[in-house]
Image 1 (cartoon, chains in turn green, orange):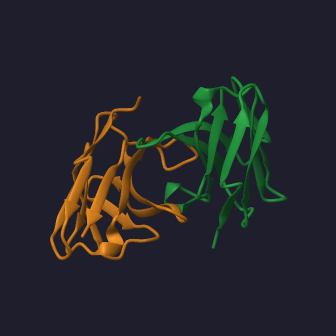
Image 2 (image 1 turned 45 degrees about the vertical axis):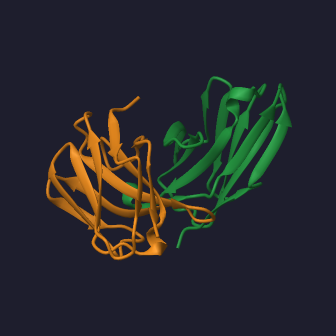
Length: 112
Length: 113
């Protein structure tokens, strides 16, 4: 059974700092790895999706990498801003979306 | 934002009562999903649908049933609500079964007393 772990559970950084969020998964036979953002009381917003054949994806200040062999993905946020404060979730997808396993998230606070 | 709405957004009910949550989409996507989100567990798939009248169970389907009579609507029913079903419920849609992006609704907070 796939297990997805995100450490740390919470992170507080000063504005402008570069930071890395970690996601690890136990079964490397995944189709893709997806990072989401969740704001309080809201649904999830997809940030980046990395297919199994890819090593990384970039969108603006965000860069996500995937290393299937080690069972790890990282989300790099450059020059953090208070608006980046949210919970970040990763999800490992093995097959169709009926086989998706979410991590429990990292709650990020960026202090002005 | 993808056109997904959930109703109600908040509900408080008592143990043993039936509850139906509705997910409505305007994107004409084939696949629809119901998740629950609980502290310490992340999101877990309850049921999903791959077309009108086509549904299947997810990881935590016990105590839940679903129906999809139209492309745009996916209903989640708790036949007899229990306190363990207190949770935040999210609906999601996707155009394909993957790899693809899922779009999530705003969630329904359900409290079973």
